[in-house]
Length: 147
Image 1: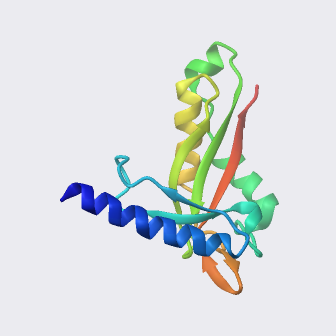
Image 2: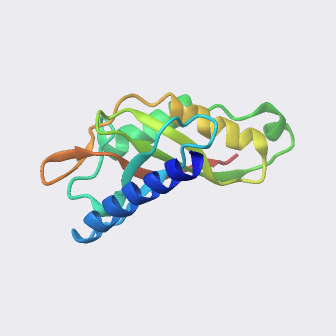
């Protein structure tokens, strides 16, 4: 039974992927077997949508939000450590930030955890769209920790 279910899911994913390839866009999915995902979430890459998702207040607002929300981990501050974390997340068609994960670690767990915390606290974005239809869009954002 499980084999047939996986085969059905594969066929659905293959059909949707082929349909989207005809539009010249690559579609990704989030694995439902990871702990916090319960179903497939299809998304477009940031550069592939006609209208990119927008943080409230634009880029300036995003930088201000990160600087106001980010807290330098005490142990890293005492040890004079610096780093940069690349985080990946999906802006849903409703503007909600979901599927936050570390894309490239800084090498220090406390920096990685703080970057994920900051992104999870973000307010709703203005969703990205293709042909005036709001879609899920994956974004990658660097969070720097500098002394």
